[in-house]
Image (cartoon, rainbow, N blue to C red; front, side, top):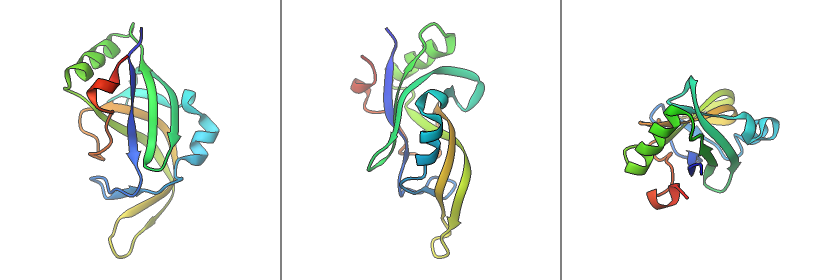
Length: 141
């Protein structure tokens, strides 16, 4: 059986280490256009290393929640699953193109209003430190 993973790839209203803040609704157009099946699951944003498939991706009151499965027959997926199970890895990160944004004149934060999302990666160090897979006991079934 495949390993099921889930967690938040982005959280609304929180500044990442690059001083970007994703606004609620920013992913809506991309999700409607692409759906979860056309948003890739990659290892460390490397397009040469797909490791699974996203089964569902949706915005909720907190952010961008995703649920997917690692492909057990892919060597890198097996390695990632082992690292996740050991607790050595739990970061998520989005790969996207900014469609609309505005710079907040007071805070100097860039507010992302619309994002063209094309991939969500499992990463060692997410740019948004809170973008993580859920608690270890919920990661695998």
